[in-house]
Length: 328
Image (cartoon, rainbow, N blue to C red; front, top):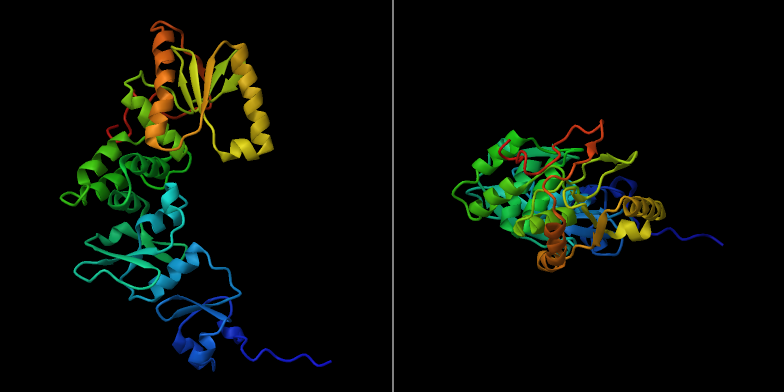
């Protein structure tokens, strides 16, 4: 039996990459064929082979290709492409955030959320082949669409000590350039609240909740040695001998993580430490969950209690209260 050639199949030159209707015409593909199920329209006059994976990077690339060369990816899309944390309501990213320089009009189109802004060219970079807001500018962009706690969490993730995406000076330049614009006061407050030792959005939100309760400064993710065992609790109030651990999905689904957590829990129990394990949802719910723990921290606080020895390999800032990152 002779197999019939698929007459609607795209030619090799158009498969696996973005193309325009002009590219299609040059390859002998007409408009009717583009309206078939062999191609997917991602943006104005930008298509992709339907068999190709359509991820965020490809959608962002299509959005930029549909505009002139002055546009760049920004806001929530930029944060997601840098793999920074966003609140659940923004993770779908149904539209690509793109910005153009003033006084151009904000772009419009299917799948695009357009903005316009006066921006120093130094705050735009090439990342994985895309023109995109720098990490420092991505933090500043957050003032347009994030609440305070999530803005701090975004900032924490950008300066995160293990692999920072921006320096203190880069953040200060970007924030200073935002003076006089909407949300600047909140942006500056978020910058002052950032710290490089919060390693996840839930940890950032919990840290802010603890600060609001006016507790002594905790040690966060600081490795210490107790009875010959090295521990690095998410949050530790050593003068109260109270630890708080943030539970995420990986603690429930990753067996290795689960076993590690179990072993650590048994160790701290033997050492007479009081441990609380929290899941972090909204800032309001987190504040409610932290209130009774805060009472225990105050009740157990001993100002003369001996602090544990910090592990020799640690080189970061142990306590939030010793030197604020923004001011240091």
